[in-house]
Image 1: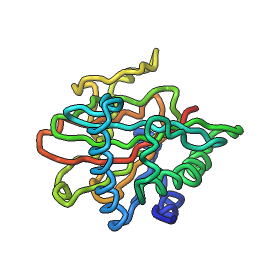
Image 2: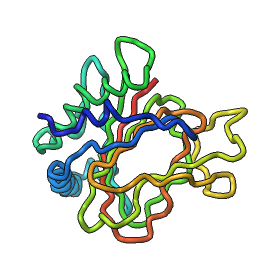
Image 3: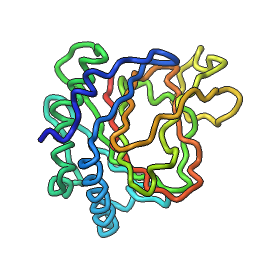
Image 4: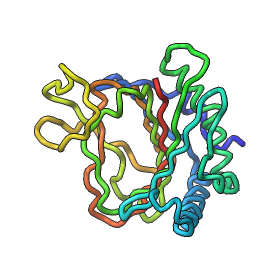
Length: 227
């Protein structure tokens, strides 16, 4: 297989403020471009299957594939993905390498079986999500961008925020907040083929996407590991 730049994941240094994260490139340009065509095949398949219409909306589609480190990915409702290459091989690399590398990299507590979710996501104009930390049930999140040539000059990477008032001091809420004076934007992740961020989910791992006001095809492979 070797579709992914695993060494970059292993060697990426941590940035610790405002929370623990790392940045690197996970896809080369050739693999990035092949995945664009794979995503078009997914869209066509979802449009032709009434049972999967809930995965589609006017501003995105999202497929969630759950699995665990003992049994691998459960393709329930999405068996057609096994026929799409190199996407399926890449999913297996997540199953066999990426998940285990992240468990080791973030020094997660050793146990026999970790559950995870791999998401195939396609965002369009008008998509937005306010500052949030991700659920407290998650341990690590990773996002990798698949970038179309038409979008290469657009700033579509996720933004990192600093919470200025310690909003989760008393209670860590599973909530998307409005973007207001509570949050200071510290960084927007560079948007290029294979651009990747992973981070430790915590009370202050605030990130989000401001409203996309331009036409785009914002494709990504996202995943998280449960605690």
